[in-house]
Image: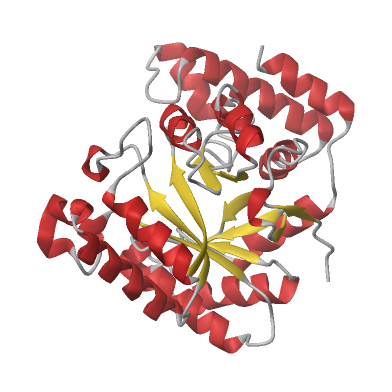
Length: 319
């Protein structure tokens, strides 16, 4: 078995493996068979990963169900879970529309359905999914909102261990962390080989409040999952920059490709090991659609920190 180090997840005091299993991509929504999904989950348990992240909206609940069944197959292993409440149009309370976000009974119903699918009476972390959505109605100064009142009551009851935030908007997450009412933040795309917006406000605020930090979107929605030199060269020639593929990011990506070739590292290995060089990141979530992809990620993280020379090259690329 590979040895995956653990880090303390902020004030939760949970010790989590540096690599966590992201469960978004292996449902029927993405054409993945349940047999392949089960192979990924069984490998994660057998390899000793002790943290998995899911959400109610992943596969319209199928992901939570698959994870719950895997937990039943591995009753003597420790797997700490985070799931999320949000994207309510993909849950059992979708009939209420946007009104569900302000309805405490509906929010509780959605959360209880997640626990039922997970076959758990308790979950270690429950996050608000995309907390920047206006439907939540967060008070920007106090963090108060119907969903937070529900989560704080469930934490008081011991149904959840910690309250978290999961999304892409770093400024919104930093604002809410500043209230001191959240224990964990999963920031998607906040810390990658070519962008690190999490460093500006989220990490300083997290240090102030001892918030656990989970890095999601390590492969930046596929941009850092494979070498796409031909595609990027075409963008440079045509000037058809769009979305995250801005001129500076394309330049950085091409330089990262060169570094991968020189260092003889895959881009996914470089991406994971780069994030974990920073002790402020407590775990990185990496999804998989095949067991082989998870196996590669496990071997990458088990290699430990990158050489200082490689880190210096990445820093220079991002200047």
